[in-house]
Length: 302
Image (cartoon, rainbow, N blue to C red; front, top):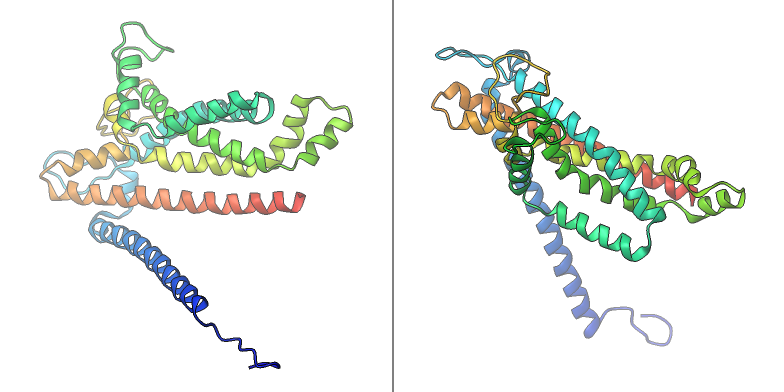
């Protein structure tokens, strides 16, 4: 009670609103808990099955010969690194340049259309992209971009770059939109041309977000299997770096080993799956930290 006989306690409609609010909060907390629990269960179950094969040999040795135990997946780890490197080298410059054009130079209507088609491409099933690259670069009678008529790391990296492109481009667009306009206006007031303003003012301010988008795209492409089944399937016994030949990869190794009857290969498949999960988790957390840092930096500029 307060002076005048007025009560601060909720009554009637206010009580119903409080109850609905508590129910909504409880539902949201429960949903978040379920999501976290699923992640913990998946990672934990994979780790338990991977423990028998998690050792140093797994990272430094090639597959064991038929009938032998032990061995490792070093060729698959190196092959995945080469594929991701090729995909990043292709998608990063194209994605960033496309984002710069749409955000800084293109008419708004055309820019909105580009964003729409990038979102559509981002939702494409990866197996469709694999079939497309298979027909374009592997089975084509005319060599495309020097990829030849056979499976190779170039073809696999090209397929992965198509998957990475919309992620890199759309993230870069979002970060460029956060750069304060007064930075551009101050540069224009000094007589600096638009393209030079973008290169010297806008891009350095958004570099953290660009790195974040690229990191997230790498995390996604590293776990893709379907495109590699059509473009780069090879179970190598030795470590090789030649991108003109098909290379082994972690996703294909998991797929291949899981189909075998050898328990040793099953354990290595689980170990490879855990390595891939750990890579994706670490990469995603790194991207999140970089994005938060970039947002704080842009907030200070504003």
